[in-house]
Amino acid sequence: MSNIIRDIKKNYLKMERELVTQLNYDVTNHQLTAGSYREEIWINFFRRIVPKKFNIARSVFIIDSNQNVSKEVDIAIYDEQYTPYIFNYGLIKFIPVEAVAAVVQCKSRNLNPEDLEEWADSIDVLKTSNDSIVRLATYIHIGKLKEDGSKNNAIQTATRPIKILCHIPVDETNTDNSKGRNKFDIVIEAYQNSKSNEKQNKDASEETSYSGNLKITFADNDLFTVLQKYNQSDMKDNSEISIKNSEQLKERKISNYKVGDETKKYTLLSFIFQFNQILMMINNPMFFPHKAYVDMFNNDIQEE
Picture 1: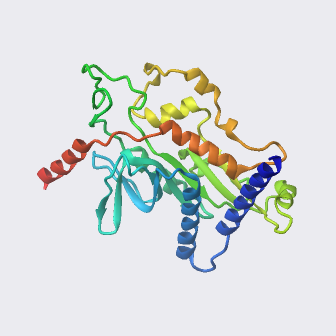
Picture 2: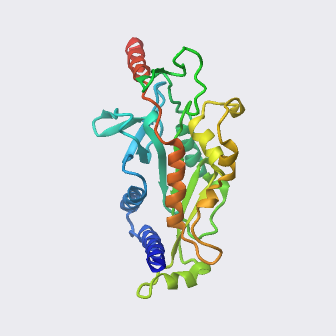
């Protein structure tokens, strides 16, 4: 059995190196082709690691019921089962923020801090609506109201997408937050020619030599922070929400989901556990606020 586990680890290490090699392939003198090529690689990467309940779309816009529209999103990970509406204008897709679990910005070598900040701000301005009505097992859910009409002190009051930056830096030391990285929740960097892991590269496969690594940085430290950040984004003072088992969540660090030690790092395998645990803390998106979007369209008609 131990040999099977080792083979699985080696396979993920090989997949990681192959991913980095593909991303660093130089499409000479054709920047647009290179960008599209790398976006497709990143899309396939996320398709392999996120649960099938999520859909993945490329080159879309995220909207809310307040008529806010994000800048173009390279990759959106969203739940179409709970939020079936994808608004279209020709081939352009607009996805309601209530459905979106994560948004991804893909960049190649150079990072423009102003562009990254503007992009991230266009996501942060989006607000989910709780103007939803749905029948649950024992009562009718109406926004934040309980069955008796009193305020519903729910754990999930307003979600927001996880912001992910996928980048191909020149080397692994390129981690300056002043370049806009600090506006993202997760930063995935695919760099090559890492001397620090040269021995591990050789151990990964007897037949093939790989010289690439993923470096993944999380802004969040523990699951309690994750729960509040992505489920209670409307709360300025999260202390007013009482969360059961909060101490256990604070003790469960994102770093606890790493596979490896000081000598061997299985970054891709670790990320699968880490990212999916974060997604499970969001679990299902907000109940879709049909009336809020009806009001949005009707308000626009009145303004014509």
